[in-house]
Amino acid sequence: MKALPSSLRQRATAAFERAGRHRDHLPLAHGRRLEWNDGPALMGVLNVTPDSFSDGGIFFDQGRAIERALALFEEGAAIVDVGGESTRPSSYGEAQEVSEQEEIRRVVPVIEQVRRRTERPISVDTRKAAVARAALETGADLVNDVSAFRFDRGMAEVVAEAGAGGILMHMRGTDPRTMQEDTSYPHLVAEIAGELEQGLDRGAQAGIPAERLAIDPGLGFGKSPEGNLLLLRHLAAFRSLGVPVVVGASRKGFVRRFSGVGEDSSPAERLPGSLACLAAAAAAGASVVRVHDVSDSARFLRMVSAIRSPAPTLARPAGAAAP
Image 1 (cartoon, rainbow, N blue to C red):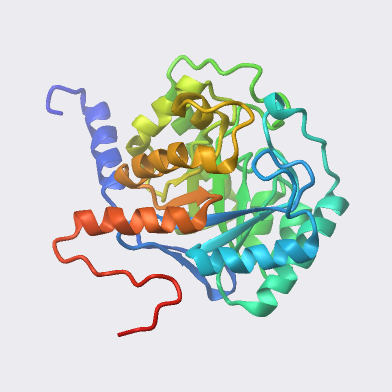
Image 2: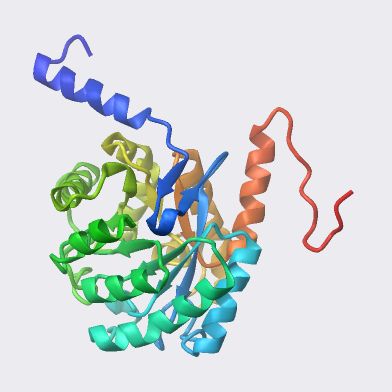
């Protein structure tokens, strides 16, 4: 450090200080909090779409979606992320663009019914300010924006006005249908960190307190398979931005490719690779991990915690009576 010029030394010192900050929760709307302790919190994925790459649209039915959300909480999700528009890459077939009205029709009734049955945190996965506003008014607490407030310039104001939490994800461009056309970066980690910092600035300008925001490097969103591995390898570097880091690798194409399963592999066949990514994220200090297989992921993290702890607590099997 002493060998660095004064300006660089100051920037490096500030980055180390930000990376070392300990946060154990993200404040959300309606007085709720997303909390994590001895490992990352699990964000359960709920796709209310007919064309999801990960589940084939089985939760497009409203009743199924509501029951699935409640089941994800029972399995160990700290928050459930409800999305009504597929953002899959074109390699899975081009996703159809969804209007604001249709996206609201898909997600708002689900959020409304889930909120009636639980006080647990709910997130809405959307790029559109109108959808976010409707979801937050219905009971959602956090907005997960894959465009980091770039697709809809009104999004940051909606989050600020609601006092909601926000996750800013990096994506190449603002359209999932074209994000994989160019996956080259001169300096991958630095470039993505810089763009996420710009997203945090957009939030600050709209009046969102920094403690209500988190960042996601966007695995699979405008990244090459090798680039996704590089981001996981250097995930801890993103903590230098001073906000919680969120990661979503579950069931993605690069997981299939590097774990050695076929393109038509089932979710169960992709699970071992997804858990390996979960291990990497936890080791790097990620605060939240977005997963489809909540039950398996929760058990995996409990085992990781037990290995690390000098005085581990025995976990009871599901349904077992307390001693």
